[in-house]
Image (tube, rainbow, N blue to C red; front, side, top):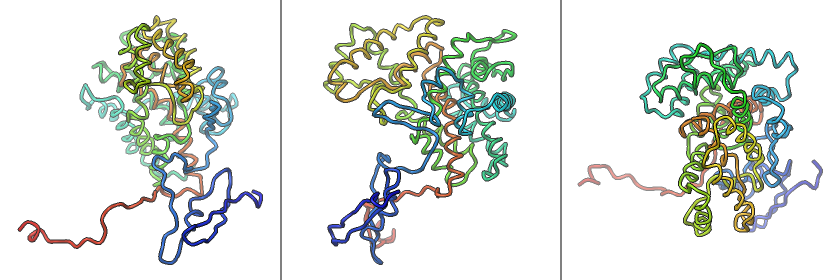
Length: 431
């Protein structure tokens, strides 16, 4: 940092000036807190609802440039990873910070494959839910319960113990997710098949019936694998922030990840692709698209699956999902809603109203169509999201544990309530 990388702040209340260092395009909130600070008065605080311009950590996991539509995991473009890698290799990259050698990948794949089974008591827990229990509620509870089966997970400073829990979480998420799916259908739970790949095994636990061995269509397995890669991490979003915030208390990773699942459960985070499907179903045909677009411009309709808090350009994940759509529909047949989606995208990319507002398709726009084609009910969409996001959550949690600057999360507040009231006993208030 050179000497001129500072910010001079003048407090117009006192006329005093403060020189605040700038590093990596940011200033420390604690330095700003010195402005106006006296023996009797607190310094300035930063009021930032939703953390729209507040960095809570330094991270080397994921890079996003929303204006240019760039997404990279550990420096590798998402386009290259989706095209040439697989989910377990990407998971290794996120967790360990580099791509594996052949020996490292074989060991990693073996570890995860042979930790996909869960304790029979977890199975009993899952079976105890009502038939109409939401799969995300079941997944959140199942993951949280794992902390009681592995009490050593609390030893978060031990690298070997940490590694064991990371392997277990990545391995067992598809099992718990598939069982939550089968529970809603009243079907028996299917145990993992260690002869299948990670994604193939998940499809087997979802859809296997009476056949001796289940072998999914490789095009479907590849498409789902790509979707997992595209969801594997996305910087400091709501669920990742939840994992880091809860993890800052130095709790075990199962509890921290269950907090991430709870955050993802919310409709503003993980439920967007379901909203896209409902929108497309309501439009029904391409003939109804122009009227819908006019409704959007008048504020009478909402265009779901367009625009993003971070991306002010085409979401790079959305481009990759269109290829996955082609592969899936080649197997399942084309969804009648695909034409509606394509017409909406075409108009939105050409119409000045949407272009000027930088409303480009995001990852949720086409993913719901793929999930529906794979015969997932809408309530399972966020479960798939959670399975894919698990390596990212864990990579972020690992950074938190090893970061000497991190403290337990404890944001400031601006108090707006009453002060100095005198308490009146109930006998007088009620007289």
